[in-house]
Length: 144
Figure 1 (spheres, rainbow, N blue to C red):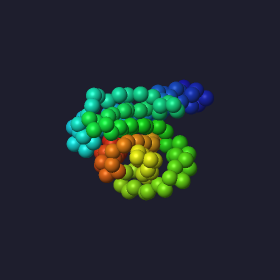
Figure 2 (spheres, rainbow, N blue to C red):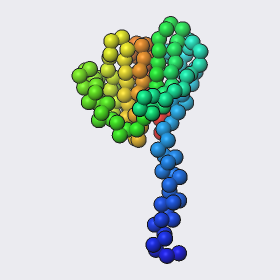
Figure 3 (cartoon, helix red, strand yellow):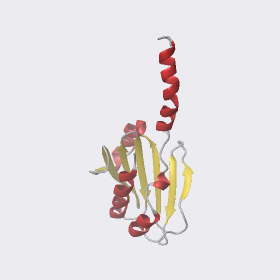
Figure 4 (spheres, helix red, strand yellow):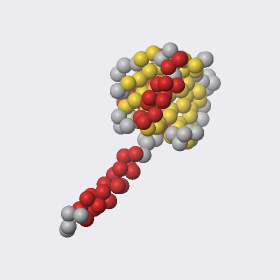
């Protein structure tokens, strides 16, 4: 094999690995129904997978009390943008969830942003902050 062909062969061999590594995890796989019900309350229906406006993977839940919960996963490349967008919302730093995490309140809803390796896990919900933090801890633990 010539040296000119070797780098191309290595790139071709690595290409499937790169595309697989770039695939965002399924947010519906981060929490079990039992974990959700123990923390969030009895679920109304099942998880509803979706894709957000910016192609992020989403998973929607609702409990019988009418509270909503959405998990989103997207590239950590958007971390600076999310921090900037939320800088006026008095972000509260959260520890032990990833490389960096914070919570913001927007009206009656709360949003938790967690950066862990290549991904951002965003958790939006109308449940109380402590319940969302508990769910965030469980979900972040399963994020690659």
